[in-house]
Image (cartoon, rainbow, N blue to C red; front, side, top):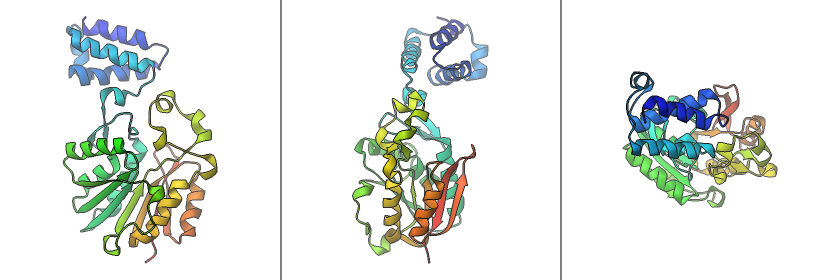
Amino acid sequence: MILKTLRTYFNSELLGYYPDTEISSFFHILSEHILKLNQINIALNLYQVVSGKKYDKFQTAIDRLKVYQPIQYILGQTEFYGLKFKVNDSVLIPRPETEELVDWIIKASISKDKIRILDIGTGSGCIAISLAKHLPNAKVLALDISSKALKVAQENAKQNDVDVEFMHKNILSIPNYFLDSQDRFDIIVSNPPYVRQSEKTEMKPNVLENEPHIALFVDDDDALQFYKAIVQLSVNNLNKNGMLFFEINEYLGNEMIKLLQKFEFENIDLKQDLFGKDRMIKATKKA
């Protein structure tokens, strides 16, 4: 089959499943991944013959897209903050708003000679690994409740040539005094589960039916469950003037401010993402 015919077939098979622009984007992403052809080269090579094995990869992708599997899981990889990350259905797909959180932390930390960072609920390791890559003076630890997620994170650390210490722990069962006093952190960061069960109807099928629910959802009546545990742990495990960074539910910014104030954190800064949503918060531990 020639590339031009494959493109027509690809578009017709996914018609009605996705908008035309998204179908076109999927085709270009897969062509670059499978055929090593970017968008310009596709236009210049429309009569190139696509071999049977490569056609089969497109057909497999079509079948998976029809059941709304994310393109990142189909490829087995994604890009985050300029780095390549392996992803599968054991980890969330890193989001652009999380890149904004990482950028905020890097800008707040770049001038420090030495810094200790703890990433709670690391998933694919995207936050911890990006910080380790861009803050060479940082010692980065990361924990997650999922052993499968930690395996992915460890592979990503190796792939991106960074040293991150990974721990298999549940934040809800860690004692408040997690570390010795000399091992306290300068930064604790987390992107914990924060989507309330009642908000499931707002989510797209490709997320709802494929990404791990343990990393997404919380009960409506205890939506700040993980934040409370992390803030309590931070009281005893952050250095004085240490910083706490969170990605948050866009509807719970005021509740987060009150939680941080309750534990006497200062300089609380609620920040919007590129879409104008209250998505990140930073606070400083009292000196």
